[in-house]
Image 1 (spheres, rainbow, N blue to C red):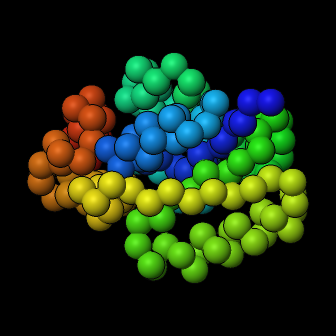
Image 2 (image 1 turned 135 degrees about the vertical axis):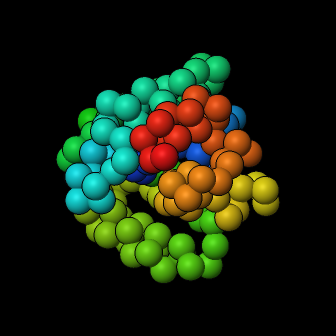
Length: 159
C-alpha cells in the first residue's frame, strides 16, 4: 500500500520553507499532495489558481508531488485523495498550540487519518508567507526566501 500525505496550506505565496518541507516529505511518503486552500476569509494576495500555478512551478522537479486546490473540509479532501496522512509544518513553539488543536479536531473528525509534523531546516524556520508579503510591500528583497518567479509576481502585485 502506498502512503499518501496531504500538505495543506494557503501558500500565499509558497516560500522556500514550504518547498524544503515538501522536498523532505517527498522522500518519506510515496506521494505528497500539496493542498492549496481557497480560504477566502484570509483575503489572499493571489487567487487560488495563481497560488496553485506558483506552487506547481516551484515544485515541478518533484515527480511524486502533486498540487491541487481545495475549498472543502480538509478531512473530506484527504479522504477524496485516498490519503492516510495530513502533513503539517512546525516552525516555532508558537505554532504548536494551534497545530495541536487542529490535529486533535482532525483526529476527532477522521480517526483513521494521522497528522505528522515536520520542522523546517534552520535557515527557513523564521520564514512565513505573511512576512514575505510585508517585506515586498515595504520594498525589501525576498530573493533568499522565495523562488525568483514568486518574487517577481509578488513585486508586481504589492509594489
